[in-house]
Image (cartoon, rainbow, N blue to C red; front, side):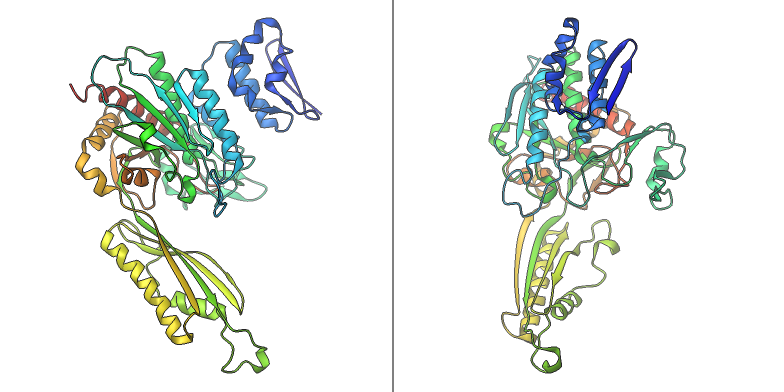
Length: 478
């Protein structure tokens, strides 16, 4: 089977039976088209393995031949074709090899667009520089986004679709499977009537978290290079793996990044600016039971699964994610498995208030002690480990960082929506490593699942905000 794709009188034939890189393919193009061989974009794509890759590649060839620059939507759609799902408990960085594949692609793209000091380390952390173009004493600032997508939903073979001029009705993702993003369940759709929206086919996440953030940063750097009249200081770009499993900032080299402050482009809806987040911990509970034949188990058996339910019932029933919002914290059971002899539970513990956070950790430890008192010492082995803390205490002394972001949004015609994150971000950990790092909207909604969608105007405004921050920072010390 051949995929025949045409544009005017120019034809490309992609053979599905043969795996061929586009770099190899372009060697056979007429000499006047040979310049596209220099584009790193093509080196990562294999024609024939994936029809959607072939289509994106074809579109990229046409853009280059006609001297049409890649826009932010093209860039994001290309990024979605990389499966970058991270994995818990992999014991390596990045946690999945496919993240490194995308990192190499981005490295080549950053070189191709003209950024300097492009460096990809062995653990998937990518850094680059847009040099200053001003004589002003502007501070060095940075923009950061993560490459991985959530383990909660598949990121393989994503099939994005653009809903043109969304009309306010339910969006059918897969009619045959009955998968629909309904306005009733997702009322935030109503805020985007009339806009072009990127959606999934209902079987994967979209990856706007955080490939939209990457696209916005890259496109902003391209825009600044194309408009040298916009003065800016030295701008650093950083892309990291494994944010979704809480490890994105662990090996981020703050000293090498060399910024006075930075921004993560990892928020959601238009206008969001976040510099408060949860304090976070994880609790691992291992339960040891006693297995005895059920016919002769009286006063002998300790059923580990029943012990697990007893433990769960010791925690407040209403302090769970599905019954809390705003600044309310929670205990979230994210894993449960076992049998009569062995069982295990995994909780994440969250609260914005540091003292309440410490109280929650104390409560879960006391629950373990009560179980051991009831069933015998050693029935439960419980370990609580802190993950990250509320960045607010690090941002408060440098509020000019958020003031600049607010002004940048206002100048882009965006109404700032300062809110606390009911979650975490790499910026929280980076702030505690000495790099103040608030979080700015990337534009997507309903992350981590098949109903994720991305209004294109959100993404375009986020890119404009990045450009504005760079421009405004140039005058910071004047």
